Image 1: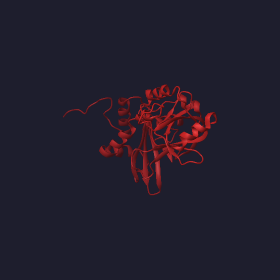
Image 2: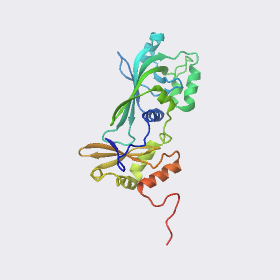
Image 3: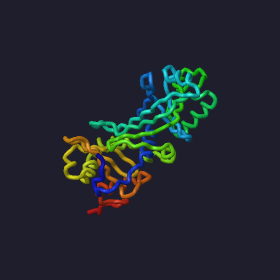
Image 4: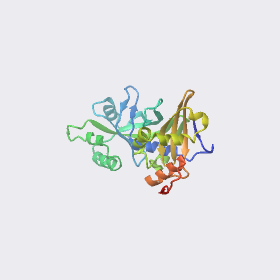
Length: 268
């Protein structure tokens, strides 16, 4: 369950579209599934400006050949993205995203330009391995395009559909790239911060094992692993933050730290 541990009111939190954009930006695990073949891992799943997704599949795999054979008809497929927690939790999956649509082969004319466009915001080294029919030794992937019919995300609160327009309007969280490293460092080197944050939880939840679960511009999420199951709790910031300085101050406020805005303890 997800709740506000402090006020019980409606939370200020990322929209579902923002969460999906952040998951895409983090470049987590993703697979393409279609009838008749085993699911295929795709190292790049990039939202294009027209609302379709650019995805990569092995050139020697069945999906590459099927997309060429299907031509303008395309192939019905589902892109599944898994958002894993940065820490080894008892239940590591934070959310699942299913993007359904039709899969098309990207023709050679314009392919290099599309790869450059993707690399401007997503410089994934795997893009260098896309087959551009130049005979390169590392050309082990084929670029495909998934025209989206529907997007559904599911987490511990349930499932929700999201329109393509909402995805295009949303932006990734400004801290999504640093989230994993920050939470891992928090868990391993600053357990006292987690304990201070845990003091804001309802008393029954403090008896469980409290772990950092998520971080975004709106607040911090904690996972409580208890005997009666897992409980996810959001601690919202007083207002959204956009940079490292604002994030540091917001966390200090959550901790109840008296030394805000750079104040120092008086020397004795």
